[in-house]
Image 1: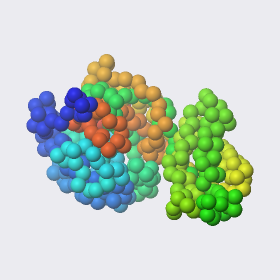
Image 2: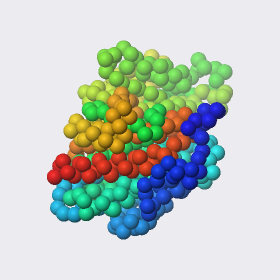
Image 3: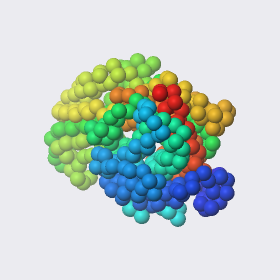
Image 4: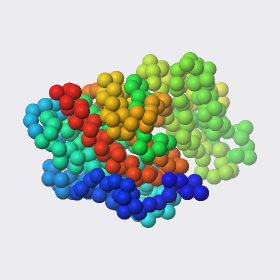
Length: 398
């Protein structure tokens, strides 16, 4: 519900539970709020991991640490069968929260502005449902609570530590504030872009800002590079190919009356076509190098490949879609367009088939906004969907 000022109306936990609260042992709302109040950034999620393990212990489920601050828990069914995984990311962002909520972050400059607190609560809710019905389904459900998604480094560390050993398929969800509560977005094929990063150093000759002719200005060259990089998407790569080249940081100088010796740029590239990804470093080196040379400066570029596109397996997506329709109704399950955002869920998909879908969380502010919040009615809905997806996957893969 949105109030007259465009904010997500705050409801007490008891008010939300009046509409239907399916967890018996765990209070998903209070779990989410506790984690929201104590956010931790990538690979620092010590408290978060400890809280997750405490709640799993309350469900009589054993767990272990993985990749330092990650957690893995296997729920065994009634007999032999395949192993499938459900994944939730657990890290927060370096953002100062401005929601004013009673459970606002107490860690200055850190906030759950992407809803990973809700993902933790949802997967714990799914764990309770699965543990309570384990005599009704065969096989194993592996719960993966993954650190460091925001820096796209956690999934690879989890894989290195054995998170996918024996796993046949993996599923996940991400809250979506653009969708109403009670709806889901499902799509097969490429749904999220690859994400890489680059760093550029422009070197010139510094001096007094009053005598620019006696210098070789790296700031001027760097500014031209920022603009020139946009020609890669607009004039070099086919306009039919989705590609983004964005500069997010520009650092140069120490004061206003000195031209520095160097300027530094940092940014990200996004794309779906892997061939485009292979071409980007060379294209950027040419564009940046020629522009810098034109301003009598030198340029160095460092390009790092991070994660490939998220590509949802067609058959697993059909499975998720059928569960969402069953649980939410046909009219509440929507297709969604692919986005240029990235997710290291793709790391798992490089190894086994996987599907990640969107859960309506309803809010006026988008992901990574300092006033981001969710409608907590989505927690039970998401927990139910993940549990049913797991059971259906075990039945079909068995």
